[in-house]
Image 1 (cartoon, helix red, strand yellow):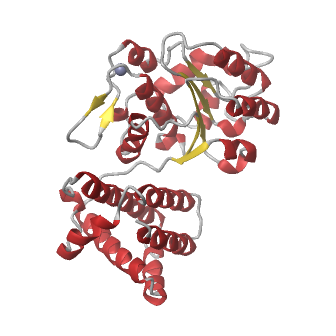
Image 2 (cartoon, helix red, strand yellow):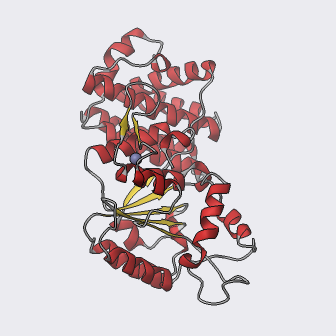
Image 3 (cartoon, protein in one colour):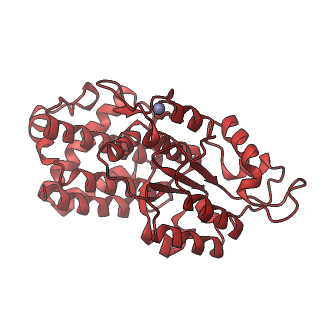
Length: 350
Ligand SMILES: [Zn+2]
């Protein structure tokens, strides 16, 4: 899987390739987000990029970098047949596997399922592919034991051994505890990516030992009138955050709360992209793209300097967390008000 094949996730993909290029890869990560939105596909593209022998970097276009798709490592990753890639996912007994089911027994079915649905199939679709929509799959001790023995070997070919656990919230307590030990005592050159749709069902001990990354919903290209609406909202929001005058800020929050969830999410994605564009302007002198002109010359000239390498990451993370909360039906007014307080603090700490 290459990032170029994951539609609408360019902003997030750029964040992932930046982390790898800067050598700050944390050995155990938790990707929180819907598979249908690309969370599993992104985890696989991430591992492929990490191990690619000829990473590509682009001067223009929405992606800053991608794996080459052609080196021996990419070819094997593309087919999910790399000997250093281990995939674990929930399973149950079937007519073929009548006892002690584990992911290893279903590798072929799982690869076929991922190929069929472009790696965006849901948990229910996976169970249907196994022939029983109503059964509840689980990741069991046997899976955890397989993980431990696979990860205790040196990589066969790749720079990194990679373990991807899809629907990690389906680990039973015994499996989760075994995996926890592996996370606590990392073996060199190992990347563990847990992909989960719900942090609430994960053991707190696992949550606290993994770096959590919220995967946003795919971003659709904005129509021009919406881009203008968002630019206007963004400019007024940022101005209110500097003054932190409660009454007008609360009016702004009421306004965004009235727009509906889909628009709120699109706005947050727009705002994150705007913040990243400002950082590129501050840190690398790159011009804001046409899409991100704020329609206000004074603001265009002065605001980007407020975003620096010191606060950009915190701001984007806070926006992502809000997006995830909205996605999970959190109350919009409270979410945007909390985000406003955080942002106001971060903007002052530049
Ligand atoms: Zn490659």
